[in-house]
Image (tube, rainbow, N blue to C red; front, side, top):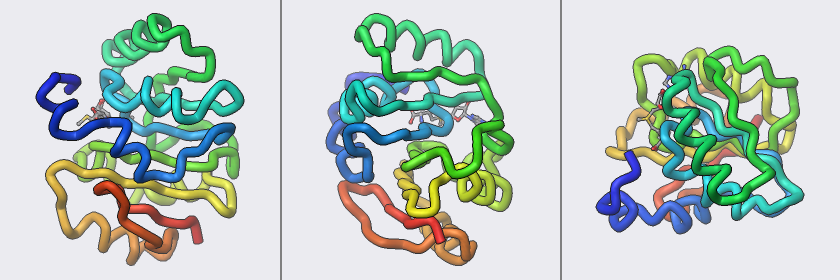
Length: 162
Ligand SMILES: C[S@@+](CC[C@H](N)C(=O)[O-])C[C@H]1O[C@@H](n2cnc3c(N)ncnc32)[C@H](O)[C@@H]1O
C-alpha cells in the first residue's frame, strides 16, 4: 500500500492538492489503510485543522498511529469505525476524502454516500481518487442526488454536497 513505486507513480501530495483541503479545515479520510495519504494530508491541513483518519482494521490503524507519532503530528485523530456508520456528528466535516476506497465491497455507495452527506457541512466537499478508475463510480455519485460534480484536478473528482 505504501511502496516506493506507488509513491513514484502517484505522488500523494500532488494527488491531495487536487482535493479541497486547506489549512484549518476538518477532513475525514475514509479507509486510511496504512496511511499512504494520512501524513501528507495532515501537513496540508496544518496545526489549526483536524484530520480524522478512519478505518475498520485495527492493524492498519496501529501503523497509521505510529506514522503520525513519528511525524510529530498533533492534528490527527485515528478512529476505528465502520465508515457506513461513523458515529460522527452531523455537519461536522469540511471535506471527505474517498481515496483508493471506492469501489470496495464493504463500502457500497448506496450506504456510504448518505453517511458522507450527513457528516459533511452544508457547503462541504467530497473528493474521490480511484485506482484503477471505474467510470461508473463518478456517474453514480452524480446520479445519487446528494452531490454535484464540480471539477477534476490531479486525478481527483471533486463534488459539492447538495
Ligand atoms: C484499498 S484500501 C485503501 C487504503 C488507503 N486509502 C490507500 O489508498 O492506501 C481500502 C481500505 O478501506 C478500509 N475499509 C473497507 N471497508 C471499510 C469500512 N466499511 N469502514 C472503514 N474502512 C473500511 C479497508 O480496511 C482498507 O484499509
